[in-house]
Every structure is written in C-alpha cells, then in structure tokens.
Length: 119
Image (tube, rainbow, N blue to C red; front, side, top):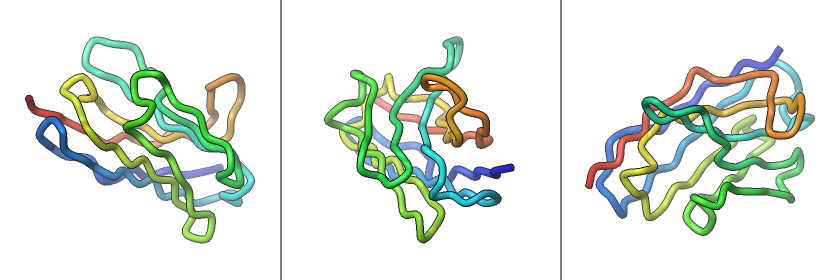
C-alpha cells in the first residue's frame, strides 16, 4: 500500500506560479515511479507529468512542457510539481499517483488538490 497526500493548491492569477507537493507513505517511495494528473470540470482526467524512480527521467504533456517541472526528493518521500506561467486552462484538480500499472496508468492515487487560475 502507498498513501499519497497532495498539498499546495490554491487560487492564483494568470502568469503566476504554484508548487504542488505529494507526500507518500507506505511502501518504499524510492522504488516507484510517480506521476501528476489533472481533471478539469466536465473533462476526463489527463496526464500532466511523470518521473522515474531516481528522478533522472521525466516526461510532460505538450500543454505544460516548458512551464511545469516535476521533481522528487526520495529522502523526504515527496514529489513536486512546480507550475509557472499558469493559464486559466490549467484550472483543475491535480492528483499525484504512484506505482505504474501500465502506460500512464497507476495503482495508487491521492485525493487531489484544487488549482484555480483566474484571468
């Protein structure tokens, strides 16, 4: 079992920044790749970014590439999502996920944190 708790969401103006955190507990955190996803009202959940176990390999959705950065601190059992140059279309509930079960599919999910970007 892995428990995930996201934090850091909030309301920000367009062009602003936020940093999301996802604290993991349970299994050894450094053994699992991690991902961030988001779900906007009325839309399906979509992939945002992921990071491998060591943190050396990352990938991003085209919509956030160059603006968002995923990172992890295995000593702190935490994965981060630094979000810069935020746009209103980034408004969504953001979820972190652990332990891949397929291509961009994960076994464990957090409860989500709301990010709202005003224009």
